[in-house]
Length: 115
Length: 115
Image (cartoon, rainbow over all chains, first blue to last red; front, side):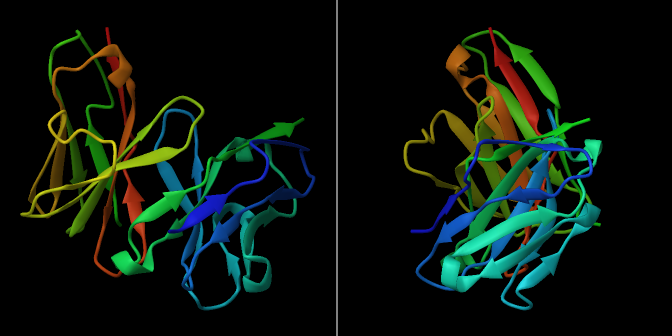
């Protein structure tokens, strides 16, 4: 079975500071990994995804994530936080036995930006 | 492209009544649709997976007779919460995917409140 662990349910950073949201995965086969963002009372928006190509993945809104197999990690970063980045972030792993469609989500990290 | 809509965006109903939520893929044909529920400040929990023209596959612990899922076409899936009770109050999110496309597209969610 696949699983995702997001360390830190709440992260606060100052505006302009580095954003680092942590995600570790467990999978018996090479996974596909995703980061989604959710704003209050809205659905999920895909930030970026790793699908076994380049290990450093660039996404929307200046976010990027690096797949590190040796560390089973897929941490999300952004060099300079903006107030509009305040939201809930979910890391997810796909099940390759299901056509890479079935997702397992982490518990989420709420990002707060301090003015 | 890849827009998924949900209707209604919010609904309030009395205990004991049934509520139907629609999920539509507006600009693509979705071979698979997923239904999630999300409790406040928690992650998304997969309820069921539906493929067009076949019965939905429910996750362990989800009552299939209570949460009826119909996927009658490649662009429409419905979730009916039968005999709703206050504990069914939640945020319900659908997503749609195409086989081996390695991505799900999420709807904006439906907030259900059962009085």
